[in-house]
Each structure stands twice: as structure tokens, then as C-alpha cells.
Image 1 (cartoon, rainbow, N blue to C red):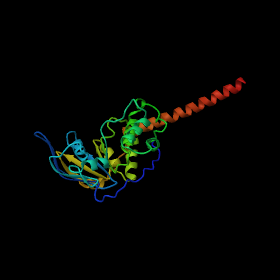
Image 2 (cartoon, rainbow, N blue to C red):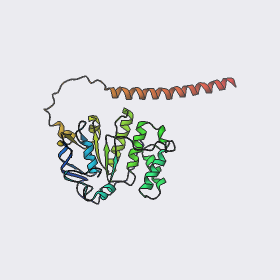
Image 3 (tube, helix red, strand yellow):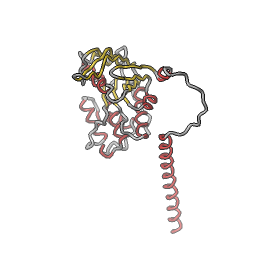
Length: 286
């Protein structure tokens, strides 16, 4: 599991929402992907952007991160207009895509040092060591990333995105393809980011992920934000719940985590018992 991370709060000299989008539109020839998107993200919060495949989630993130130009509307990130102040926006953000952007030939520490040097930061080695500690990767820091598990790669990817302490981070489906344990580890990392003052815009198709992480949830459908609110506010859109007695059955994730945890515990006890037997055998031989 992740170690306790003391992430320093980000500088918030610029007032107003971290992300402000109004009437954003984008088309690819005849296909209208975004049809007037309105969205606000408060500083230091986690907002989950939900939507089916093709809803426009990634397109919106690309516009906000200056990788695409909008056809209509306005968008500001950390107080800067994405169209007229693109360089300032890029200095204020970090983007973690759907697949971990790490160099498998390098070690984890070397990946972090490389990014720190590219950002022209002082003491890149110290920065790398601090991030390895905060993301519980210190022991794996000297190993090549090719030997990492999916969860470890994702945590390293997010750690790389923190170099320079950007006030706004975009996470585009960060847990796609991860197993339940790795997904929980990434969730813990994201929660720590927000606790340290970082603003997180998270796109996901996992409804449970949005429930676990988000302060607010926005649903993008057919190119528009059709719902935007807290989980409690969204639940109020449905009829009042009926009180019924239901015998709760464990979910598959509950079973998986329980079995894996039990297996790990048995292995540890088994190793300990074996060690005791070995010591007894040695003693008898003497």
C-alpha cells in the first residue's frame, strides 16, 4: 500500500475556479463532438467527468491542455485562456493519459530525474527520491520500469506528473486495465493530491471510481454536460429510496481482496513456521 505522502500545497495566487469552461464546441468535419460544454472546477477539488465512449471526454481534456483548439466557446485553466495564453496554461498543468508514459528501459528513479531535468529544476535527484518515497516506490526505484507491475507504472506515471508542483492535473482514465489492488493504490494517490491542494479533473468510465474519488461529478452526453453536482445531489434526481430488508452479498472485489489478503497472510505464517522448523532441526543436529 502507499506510504503516507506529505505533498506540499500548491500555490494558489490566482483566484477564481481552477477550470472554467463556457460554451465549448468542437467538430471533426461533420461530427460534432462537443456542443456547448459548460463546466467549473473549484481549486483543490476532484471532479470526475463521466461519459460513454465517444462522448467527448478526451477531446475536452485535450482542449484544456492546449493539445487541440476549440471551434467555439472559451476555456480558462488556472486563470489563463487556453487559446491566448497557451504557454501559461502548459506551465500550470500536467496531463496523464490513458496509458503510462514511462520509459521502460530506464529505472523508476531515472524516469523522474529525466523529467525534472527537462523542467530545468534544481536538484533533480532529490526531487526523484522524494517522489519515490511519497509513492512507495523507493525499493523499486533502481529497477528498470519494464519489471514494474501495472499499478507501479501508473503510480510512477502520476509521480512524474507532479514534478514542478503543477496546480492542475488532468487524469484521463488513469486506472484502465489495472487490477483491483492497483486501482485502489492509484485512488489513494489521487486523494493525496487533492489533500495537498492540487486540482484534479478525472475522466473515467468506472462509476465506482467516481464515487470513491470525486467531490463533484459531471456527466458528458452527446457533447454536453447534462448533469453536474455532488454524489448526494445526483442521487436526489432519482425517486426516494424504499426501505427494504436486503441480505447484502459480498461483491467480487470484496472476495478478491479478502482471498488475496488471506493468501498473503498464510504465506507469511508458513514461512515463519518453516523457519522455526529449520532452527529446531539445526538445534537437534547439534
